[in-house]
Image: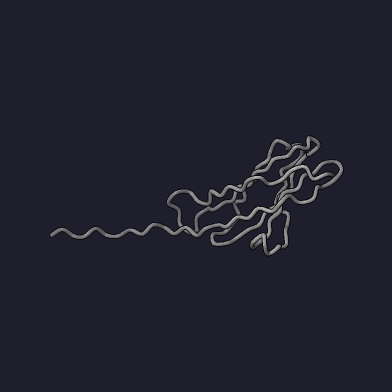
Amino acid sequence: MKRAFSVVMLVLACCLAGCAQTASHFAKLSWSNNDSSTNSYNIYRGDGTCAASPTMAKIANTGANTISVMTYTDSTVIAGNTYCYAVTAVNSAGESPMSALAQAIIPVLLAPTINPLPQVR
């Protein structure tokens, strides 16, 4: 199977407004593909920076006949960690090589502090 796509954008919308460090974080990937023979996509993730060539493990498959699904949201990320992602296309001939790597740095978002108002006497 030829390599016919690449990860073109990694959008981080890590946390809902006003959330604390322990709240839900996520990394959203999207990609494009010009190969109409694709049946599904495999998503791979490694812990650490892409420059460090982390070991990549498959974390998801978009499912059969999902060529139009070219996004994936990883909601298992942890604040303060860095992740490296790649995508492969799957068809009847097998799995393509991995796409270009995309890195996500999940920031630590702290809960807002509340300062008491000065007392008026």
